[in-house]
Image (cartoon, rainbow, N blue to C red; front, side, top):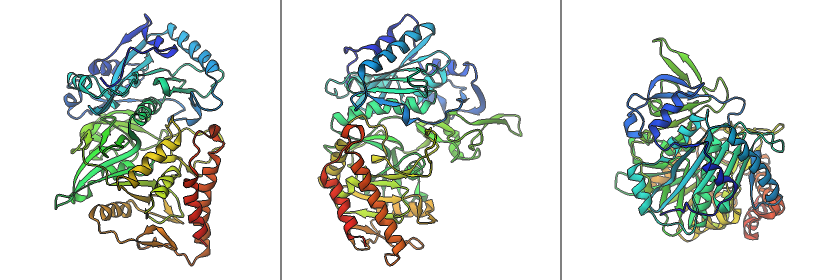
Length: 537
């Protein structure tokens, strides 16, 4: 069995066993509870083939809206083991939070993270009454318990001595020390506590945070991105993974069908793991958590919606209650989409990954560059440049347009960054995985259309991309794309490119002190970028 339930726990797990706790495992019951929960809007939009999802035959899409906060708040994350985190002080906060759950009814549910017997973890969620929609969304986002998956879990590989995941959530409880909420993680014992956090994304990513940590400790590279397999007309398969934050285009690129040019199979567009041993990949969740703004109400993709969060509603010309998909009420309207959205969906790919793409929004980079040095490829992933998105709640004064670095597009890491650096370096060096950076933002002042990006992906898959040295840089290649050709005779551009690389070195240097140096990378990583800077004149 993948993880072990009977493991010595402390404050968090104890809360699951109070006499005010009701266990909710059945998905249909969870749906009815959410449908009847105060504030839920039951639309007139039917769920597509609900029986295949495990929902009632006549299920409708449910809409539920939060208040002020409609995105994740990184400032609330506290990870035990990081510098400055005092376990004794946090324990007091947790005890008080658990004590306060005695005044309300709590629901305990279970789900599986990981959809193949190679990697399955059991997770538990404890959440108060009135948050039935969060409970339903959690069961829909991950794999709720069925006879099929219960049997698969029994037969799955045991993952060392890892205990189950336990997450306690009380969205209404705020401690004076954490007025903006607390997302506490104890990665060594696979448990977390979410306080004052209503947004479902906190529960989704909080669960994945612990699952990715388990994967990292047990021979996998943890991935916040999408992965697909494209089979060409000649039968050749190409497995490609794209890594990016919300808004980078990772979902769009993962689900692109390429006008039928390939037989496309999707693993997932957000969460998966890569085996360091053989390059195979496993999806961690069956459903998709997508922005609604990308899909107008008339979009055929909306027939796969299961639940919707933080969107408006209106009565259409036929007198039906429907959702307003555009971000009018607030930014970051979200929906859970059925696994059925991707017609050719699998939960594991045995074929080893061929290509890893870092999706960036760095105006100094052309639409694509190819990195032909394993150290440089990995450290560029560790310095993945992007901009913040509406999926995040930002602290006052933070510029949403500022360029930031988010290593491997994964802000949910609970272990030292060097472990990811070494795993991706090994994929490039030992398994021969190719690496590219695709810029999905602007090149200098010019927006890069998604059609250009999809065309680049197709040339990579087809093997027809013609690369040349990126200026004086032989270890970085690029290809000529009309309207986006870098001009190395333009000193303004050269200075901007050099500045972008200097920003990466400065970021790497900051890791020597940040969090007590926990995420500091080996000197070879800094050296690879410094060597690039030395050549840029």
